[in-house]
Image 1 (cartoon, each protein chain N blue to C red):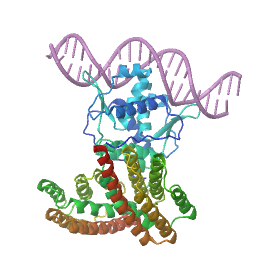
Image 2: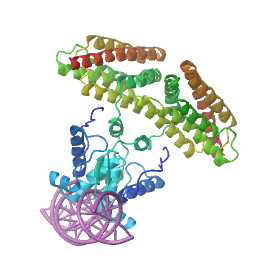
Image 3: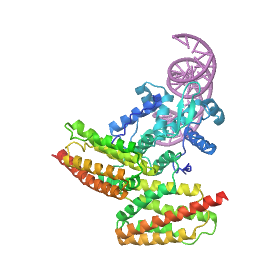
Image 4: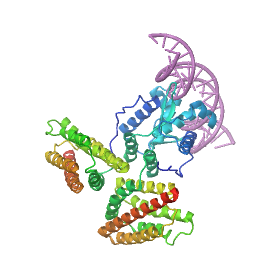
Length: 253
Length: 253
DNA sequence: CCCAATTTGTTCGTATGTATC
DNA sequence: AGATACATACGAACAAATTGG
C-alpha cells in the first residue's frame, strides 16, 4: 500500500465538510482499514466530530466522489472503504484534461514508447484464454465497415484491443496509463469524428499488425512483439494525422 | 477541449445528489462554460431541480471534490467552473493506487522509457531561466548530506529535478504522467525510508548524470540528453533496488 | 469602521426510503 | 408481514463570509 499523499494546499481555507472528509481519510489510513471495512455510522460521526448531520453527509459525499468509500442504506448498511475501479479512476482523470486540449501527437508520443514496452513484457505470459479474447475483438472488424455507424464501432473496437492489452499488464501503473491514453484517444476520435471519411488503409494495416502481434505474443517473441507494435503505432499516427487533416479540410470548405 | 467521458455505470443506482451533480456537469459542458464562469445560485438550482437545499449542496460538493468547481460565499460569490490544478489531479489519482501496491520496478519501467523521450524533445527548447531553475535544484544537493534528515530532503530534491523537467514539457499528457510517477516514487521513498542507509554512490552518480543532462539540454543535443537520461534511469533503478534490499535486510535482522 | 445586502455555510427536527431479520 | 437499523431527503431557521457604501 503506497503512502498517503498529504498536500499543503496553498488554497483558501477548506470548508468544514472538506476538513471532515480529510480527517476521516487520515483516520482510515491510520487505522489501516481495507476495502470493505466499515466506517462509523452517521450518528457516530456526528458525535465524534460534534457536527450536524448535513455536514457529515457532505463529507462522506466528498469521499464517495473521490471513489474512496461507498454507502449503502438499510440494516448492515453504512459507509464502507472502497477500492476504486480503473474506470472510475480514468473518469476522474479525464476531468483534468477537459480544459487542456490534447493533440493526436501528444497521445501518440506516449503510445509510441509505452505500448511496445508493454507487449515486449507481455509476450509469452498470456494464457490461451487471454489470446482468445484479443482475437475475439479483432473478429469484430474482420470485414470492412459498410456504414458510418459501423465504421465508428470498428474504430472503437480496434482501440478496445489496446485497452485489453493494457489490462493484461502485471504492472498496474503501465496498465492504467495505457488504458487511460487509449480511452482518451477513443473519446477524441468519436468527438472529432475522426472515423468519418472511412480510411481503408488504416483499417487494413491495423488489422495486419494486430494479427502479427498476437502471433508474436503467442510465440513468446518479445522482441518481435515490440517491433510490430512500434510499426503499428508509427503507421497509425501518420494515418490518423492524415485523417485529422482531412476532417479539418472538409470542415473548412 | 477533449470530450465528455460519459460512463455507463454498471453500479447500483446513484443517489440523488450524484445524479444532480452529473446533470449539472452535463449542463456545464453543453453550455460550453469555461473556467471562471458562474453556475446558477443555490436557490436557482433548488428551483430548477425541485430539490431541497441539502441535496443541491451535496451535489456541488461532489463536483468540488472532483475538482470541477469551486465555491465562494458572500456577494459576487457562488459556484464557479474551475480548472483543476495538476497537484489536485495527482492527488486524486494517488487514491487509485493506494490499494494497489506499486513496486520500484513498476515505476522504473515507466520512467525508463518516458523520461528519455521527454528530455530528447526538451533539448534546445528551454529558456536560460528554466535551465537556471534546474541548476538551482541541483545546488540543493551539491554537497553530501550530513544528517538523515538532510539525506531525505536531498533525495526528494533530486526527484523534484525530474518533476521540474516534467512541468516543462509542451505535451500535457507526458508532463502529467511523469510528474505523477515522480511524485509516487517520492512518496514511496519517504514511506519506505529508502533514503535511510545513506547511499553515496546513488548521490554521486545522480548528480553527475544530471549535470551532463543539463549541459545537453542547453546545447540542444537531444540525442545526448536521451542517452544520458537512459543511463541515469538505469543506474538509479539498480541502486534503488539495492537500497530496497538493504532496507528489507535490516528490517529482517 | 461599521452597516447592510448577498450568497454560501451550518444546524436541527422530522419524515421517508431501503434492506435485513 | 412487521420490527429494526441504517442512510436519504426535506424545510425552516440561523450563522458566517464577503463586498460595497
